[in-house]
Amino acid sequence: MFESTAELGKSFMSGIWSLFQIYVPGFSFTFGQLWLGVALCSLSLWLVKFLFGFAGGGGDSPRTGSTDKPKISEKRRKDEF
Image (tube, rainbow, N blue to C red):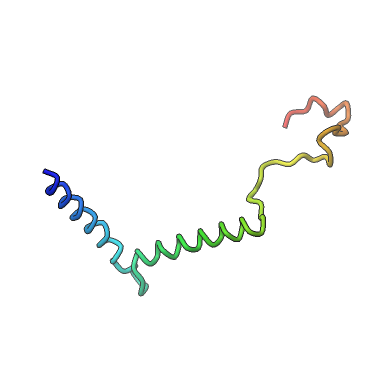
């Protein structure tokens, strides 16, 4: 039973792998090369962000310079954001 399961897995994986050998319509590269390029671009952008410390949005920052004692007028203290 193990051999038949292994053969089934091999045929399934070879079928999946053959999908990556199809050329992208209108271009001279395959879907496998396309996904490899996308993965390498993503990895390189992450590496640049990591090395140079670029922030990716980071959330909302307060409008005041100090969050310990913000200077908010009495009229604006109960405003909702």
